Image (cartoon, rainbow, N blue to C red; front, top):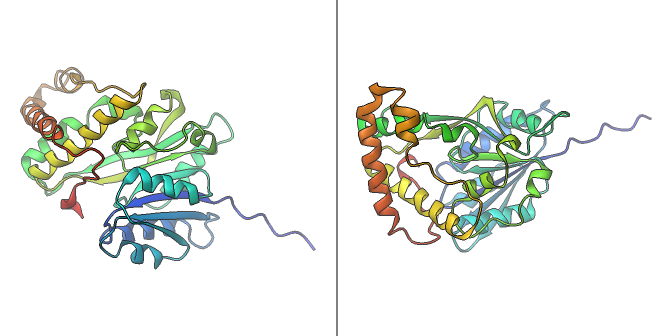
Length: 285
């Protein structure tokens, strides 16, 4: 009797979720659809519901094959580390709970990480920012932001990134600082990272100017904490908006005024952001 074919090696997925009952279902349904009958894909999905006061854990546990870990206290780094301790699959992907990947996206990124020739150690999808229906000032900010060259080889700003088993060996645990994607970005040289442009991470931008400033302040505070405590973190490039975006495209000058004003407002707010706090944009939940 011929031996049965070997089971596919599972693709690992870790999702840190804090009060994400409204969005976690859509995230998981998209992932599970990618591993449907005949796909040849097996998923090892771990959702870490941390400090939740809603039905995040129940919604996640209702999906077949999804393992749920519950932590009493909210904290993204602790949640990611708890998920890593349980997950077994590689390549391994870290997703934000509100990310909805399109059909084939996870498989395409996993294929890039396991390519037989010159595979990268880390991958991200293409970054697509949803600005439809947002106020003019929010759209103006992203008219500049989406053209910044820093995102060409960055692992941050997309809500999803994946590493191979060799890539995961580049670090021990996620640090207590909240800038987890910037931390991972710093573990790899540019040649070791790759954007899988055939697939996209669709990122919902904040729906109001106030929410935009709050979101940027959280990001800036987390990045500053990480850079202060860990050497070798990619530095910011404050003049890039002018040199790389506006000077080659003078018609973006009005949008640049908005970009600078919002950036300054976020920088001031970031000084008051509580250390380690898991802030987020609630306007898109």
